[in-house]
Length: 180
Image (cartoon, rainbow, N blue to C red; front, top):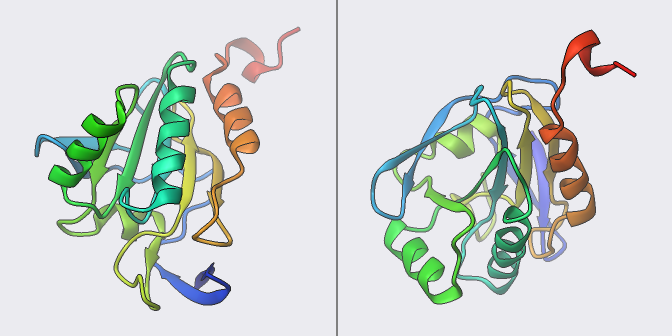
């Protein structure tokens, strides 16, 4: 079982562990307007999946604001922030914070995303919500980058994630992408 930390205390993570090179599972999360958003699998463009425990915390809010700014700079990619927050709360957060360059999706109904991507906190005070993680998928739906933050209360490695986003959005053409 994978683990992370919450304020220095070990927390177990449940669900199906997915790794770089794996085809990302296709799951549906609930948008702020209660419609469904499908994430994972091949979508013909890169996908940035930002996973946070709750938008109602300072670190998650800061991370979402940062990706909202960075998302505006990324072509041929979609950005979705996934948490266990209710869709209404996610919508209120987006309105209050001016979040317009990314989608938010709630996994509150069945925890399908958290289980499929192996980011469900299994124990500790936050049991039942998601760990802090980032998944970058290429256009074919393969996981090109994965970070499960070693400390839930700390922001992810933005530099590594942004570099992976750039790599995932580069068109791979002839010769398996090795053309000169």
